[in-house]
Image (cartoon, rainbow, N blue to C red; front, side, top):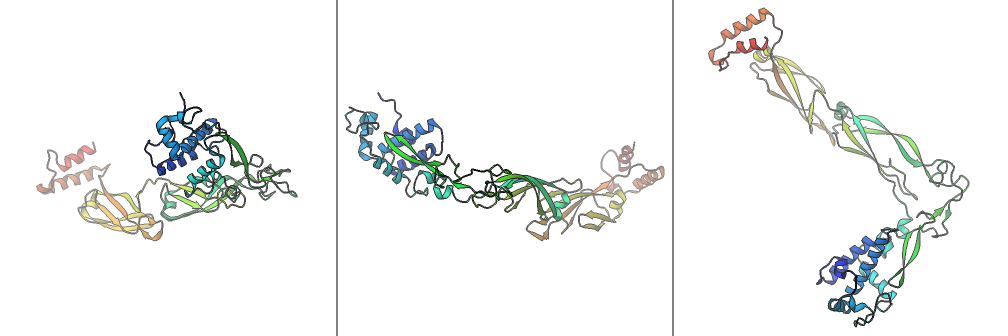
Amino acid sequence: MSNKKDYYELLGVKKGATDAELKKAYRKMAKKWHPDANPDNADAEAKFKEVNEAYAVLSDAQKRAAYDQMGHAAFEQGGGGGYGGFGGGHGFSEADLNSMFENAFRGGGFGGGFGDIFGMGGSRRNGPRRGADLGTNLHIKFEEAIFGAEKEVRLNVNDICETCDGSGAKPGTSAETCRQCGGSGQEVVTQAMFGIHMQSQQICRGCRGTGKTIKDPCPTCKGQGRVRKNKTFKVDIPAGIDSGQSLRLAGKGEPGERGGGYGDLIITIHVQASQEYQRKGQTLYKTVPVSFTQAALGSDITIKTLYGEEIHHVKAGTQTGTQVTLKGKGVPNIRNSKSVGELIVTLKVTTPTNMSEKQKDLLRQFDEELDPSQRVRDKKGFFSKVKETFK
């Protein structure tokens, strides 16, 4: 009795799957287990062979019918199915199997073969490659976030070696075309599969995909073509930026390969909290104390803002918690600095402390002169509360 896995189970489809469903499932599994995507992984290679064997049978109407009727016995020697075993070479020719691969991956947006599926195509692998992006954090003051600022960021990064101009070769020499791959950055590897010799492309082991070999390495970069450098970048902080937002400096990241451009530098901003203001979007909030007398009689007070001082008239009888809105004294829009938010000021009426006896007597007289309707309606009057406060 065969120990092989069920073909439908290998492809992850039901027994009544359509041809389109089979092809879709096969493409997915073949890409997952292909040796180019799993180098030096024997288990993946075995899986890949099983998946191909399953699709080779189920994609053929006659073989699928035989399999549905007799299972794996239909393809075993002497099994009565008339197809023979895969290992015996009676099932599929190399041309048949190659045709199966081609048909399964044609029109799927992957290119012409497995090498292209995994980014292994000669023109892609050996072409220009953009450098990697870099990321860093920048802490700024609250006021710098409101008005903008010019800052500097210092980083230790990879950059092109100036001694060899990035070639990796000792000055006066040059890199040579890799003899193993002919400069393509790839080499063809032949593998035996189902008794058939199949070819696939992989990164050249001689040049590691660069297409070049260096006999005399640069003494500065040791043939790498790049070195670590301390670099300083100027950063323009836009007015209105908030914590967590990022700035992208184009072309300030890692250098590319084979003529590819530099990556970008991505800077994440962290704004120091303010002890005086709270921010929500473009709106600022702050609390301003006013004395009992100012609130009761009315008075002009000076409110300090980030844009200077503002004179505000406190109306007589103002209660604690009253809010004042100052337009244009908040946070600028990061995309339009002329659009500025509001500053909302909460007035907090303060109770006098450290009063002299004369001041206390005046408060007692004031309490006695109050109309009964203005007194606090509880067991203790206004003066009793004030007196308890200063005990």
